[in-house]
Length: 372
Image (cartoon, rainbow, N blue to C red; front, side, top):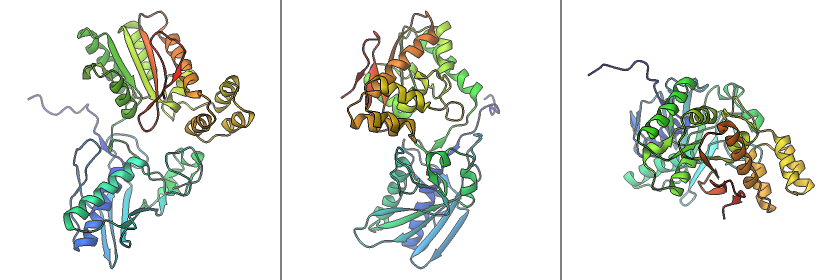
């Protein structure tokens, strides 16, 4: 027993997790007349953390519960924010509806995973909230037909410190999260962990490693290469440069780098730190890339004024333009430039939000191709 490691950063919980837990507590109170405190919620990978309630109110056909977000040691602008869920019954068969309360934004522009006019509650939090409501409905024999309104007092002011205004999300914050967990963000610690991962892979004489920008792209790469062991997975995240520069000096024969379209656009454009706070998509350059592929003038003009890289990808796909393949090739060139003459063969996979590989640049650096 060596005692507690005080250098280890403490993880926290996403706004999506807090919203799901609050919604579950409110709905259970609406059904039974009593709030569960603490309230458990199931995360996407099956973990069931419990949360103490900071606010509860039951009034006729509505119930409200609140949870204070704890982001752990991550410098998150929403750390300490109160996430509220107000739940009210709907008619039989009306299903689950979402509503943006005070401090939660509304989507106004195309290119985001939620369509315009909808509350800025991302797909995974919506799924978590839906599963939490369904769990209560199953346990107590109710329909689960409810409206869930999520609000964050002071959220509109906090949103000014985020990218929401530029993305056309008005009125407040987004309810985010893909794993339900906030992992503390320390650049030095994260890059050090990547280096240690490469060291472990080399010590085990692995000949192939995977670096991915996130869980979805990592899953796609693993499905492509199911024979690889867990130790082949490098938790690259946004630190493509940290991984590639270390591989340059400590090579592994084969590298698969997988990421979402927007992240790989930035890599293809020369960015090595892919975090949104430190690099941006150059839409002028992306429009020029489309023009070089023979895209229509309307598509090129739309790309220059696009809100997100996803919007460009969707528009190009609708017109049969394989911009993802061009980005895969560009990212491959950028990776090779960073690796210099290191003996590392490279494969690039462009992965969409649903986890499908939409384009790739193969190990032999042949023509980038669109995955059908």
